[in-house]
Image (cartoon, rainbow, N blue to C red; front, side, top):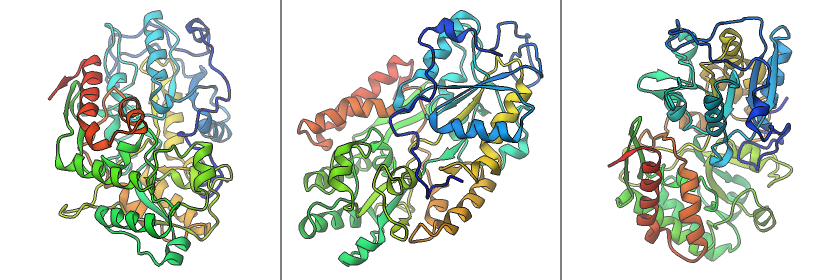
Amino acid sequence: MVGIHTAVQLRRRPARTVAVLCAAATAFLVLAACGGSNSSASGSHGFPEAKQDTSSTITVWVDADRQAAAKAFQQANPDTKIQVVSYDGSANGSNSFRTKMQLFDRAGSGWPDVVFSSQNNDAAWASQKSGGKQAFAAVLNKGLVPDDTLSKFTAGSLNPCTVEGQVYCLRNDLAQAVLWYNKKLMDQFGYAVPTTWEEYQALGEKVAKEHPGYIIGTAGDAWTPEVFFWASKCQANGITGPKAVTVNTDTTECKRAASMLDTLRGNGTVPVVSVFTPEFLKKYTGKVLMMPGPAWYAGAIFNNPQSLKVPAGQLGIAAPLPWKGDDKPVTGNVGGGTWFISSHSKNLAAAEKFVQFVTTADDYQVKVAPGYPAYAPAAEKWVAKQESSKYFATSLEPIVTAASQVWDGWGYGIFSQEAVWAKTVTTAVTGGKSILELLPTWQQAIENQAKVNGYSVN
C-alpha cells in the first residue's frame, strides 16, 4: 500500500518514462483502439461520437507515477481491455499532450481513448475545435459521467476542467499549498509557527541571524509563483474567458509577495534552488524548518528516501497563511493531475469506466494514490489512512481545509505560467536581479505568451 507517508516520487520529479513513446507520429497511428474520423454528426453526450464498439481495447496514456492507477484498474476490471502507454504527462509545461493531439488531428486518426495530464490548463485547449476539427476532450457533464459522481468532487476542484459551463476532465488529486514545518526543530529553537505572511517573513529574518544555514522555503522551482503569488492574490493570471486574460503585476498583492521573497532570498532562508536537485539535498537535508508548498510535498520531498527523509513524528502541517488585512487566507495550487476522455473514442463506456475508477475508487485513490484525492469521499478515507500511519506530528486538518481555499482569481489558460516564470524570472534572479524589479518584465512575458496563444489581454 502506497500513501503520502511512503516513498514516492510525484509528478514534479524529472520524468521517469517507463515505456518510451515512439518519436514519430506514424507510430502512434497503429496503437490499438485509437479513434478514427468516422464520427456521427451529433452524439447523445454533447459532442460528435465515433461509431461505438464496446468490446474494443481502449488506449490509455499515463505518466510514470500513474502506472499504478492503470494497474489498479486492470486488477479490479480484468474483463476490460486496455493498452497502457507511458509518456511524460506534459510535466513542467512540456506541452507534449497538446502537441501529440495536434498531430493526430492532422492525420485524422490515432487519438488515445484516455489521457492523464499533470497540468491543470489543458482543458483550455482540449475543449476547443482546432483547425476545423472537433475538440479532443469529450464533454463529461451531459450524461457521460453521472451527475452524482461529479457532485461529490471537492468544491472548486473541477474549475480547471470547466469551460463555459461544460466539464471536460476529472481531477485526479489536488495540490493545495499549505505550510509544512519540522515540529521537532521549531520546538528545539523555541519558534512559534507563523500565522500570517508577515510573521513568516519576520521569522525568516530571525532564523538568518540565529540559525544561519536553515531555511523556511525555496524559490527555485517553476511553480514558485503558484505558491507565493497565487496565495497573495496577485493578478498575474486572471483568466476571464476562453480567450481573455487580465494581467496586472503592478499591485500591492504582487509587490508584497515579491518584496518578501527578495528579503528572504537575500538572507539565505528562501534560496533560489529547486527541491529536486542534488544541491538542495546536500545543503538542506536536516535544515528545513518550514516550507510552503503543495500537498504532494509530503511524499515527494519530506518522507522520500531519495529526498529529505524526515523521520516519523516530526513533520507538521499548518494552514495557508493570510496577509494582514485580508479577510481570510487563500492558497495556490501546484499541479494535481487531470484525466481526459477522447471525444474520438470508439469505446466511451470503457473509457468512462476507467476514468471514473481512477478518480473515485478506493482501490486506487485510498489504497494506492500518493496525492490528496479530488473526489471528496475518497479524500476523507485517504486522510484517515494517513493519520493512522502515525507519520505526521500534527493533524491533517489544515490540508483538508486548504482544499477549498484555492483562490479563484488565478485561472487556467492554455499557456504555462511555470514556463514563463522559469524563462523570465528565475534566470534573471540567478543573475542578481530582484523579483520586485522584475515584475514588469514578468508581466510583459505573460502578455506576450498569452497573445501568441490568441488571448486578448486586459
